[in-house]
Image (cartoon, rainbow, N blue to C red; front, side, top):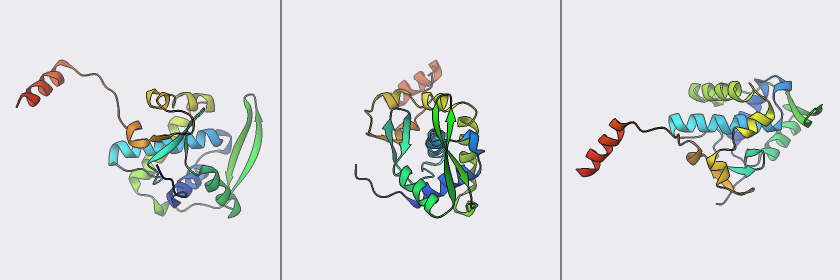
Length: 174
């Protein structure tokens, strides 16, 4: 899979998430997980991602957006955000603080809804919990550094009831 520099939407959503989350609640790990979850939520509902990415990099702490460090460096260079290291019991957290307000006009209402839903889910727990929640069957299928397709992550597993099975058998017989 050929990768190109980050879609500007990745930068827009990262800036938006940083500006809508209290700094102590959002380090680099949680930022990555918010972007992943927002993309999955939006892809499940509308068939497209918010970041413009089709896959994320599989890393030990879970999926990471392609070019995220480049995106964060650009936001810092523009004076839109600042990064500060914060000592925690688990180690040093890369914490982000917004300095310039991002434009929400680049997002649709469905994208904003998915972003806020992802922020709420991911930031409710620790960074370790956020990472562990991404260590699912799909993550286990890939080695570190490989691309994890968002479309594959958007598949939901459910239980089939007898009526579903009967319908499938009848539909396949015709």
